[in-house]
Length: 257
Image 1 (tube, rainbow, N blue to C red):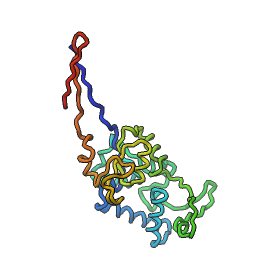
Image 2 (image 1 turned 120 degrees about the vertical axis):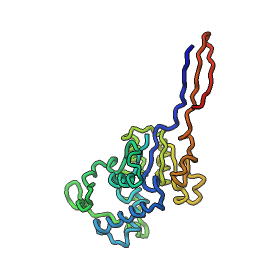
Image 3 (image 1 turned 90 degrees about the horizontal axis):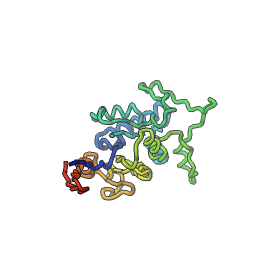
Image 4 (image 1 turned 90 degrees about the vertical axis):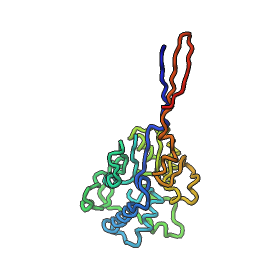
């Protein structure tokens, strides 16, 4: 008599997490501190007037996706920031890999430094001449601003190209990946590429989003609601045992492991 065991294949091979405002709530204060650091950098390193930083952050995020041009992290942030946040959350050993700013933009690795004072801002072209910095605030203050904005060399979410590149680098199958994000734009871009999607902190992003958001397969108020919202991640596999008998007669029984 021959016994054969069939184990139901899990729906997902990979859980892909955004970092900021996804793994921790806005109420933690980390996101607020991060925004302050970005604004301070604009003022101290780039010479931007303090009064313009709020508008500049909003316009850059809206038009370019960022203000800083198994279990995996996929973030627009640089590696230093990502590692610090994971350590602060006590999750530094929980993830198999990380896709961050330097992963998608390796040409910019030379500007990353543990000491921010080592970084100099000196925009130049390939032939060494200084370029004029595009003033996005002035652009949108015009009566009839052009719809065409300068292309950015930075690759980041919500660009579909950025998500495709991240999946390729990490060797991830989007059809078998659950993608956790706090940004509706990033969720919708991921969905177009075949990812299964979870929108985190929806009520803080979109009014009435606690029920349904286009592009989101699941909607969570907090990452801590994951057990209730996606119970299949914790369900044990159904194991089917087949008993093969003489005369080509098979008797099948189902056992829940």
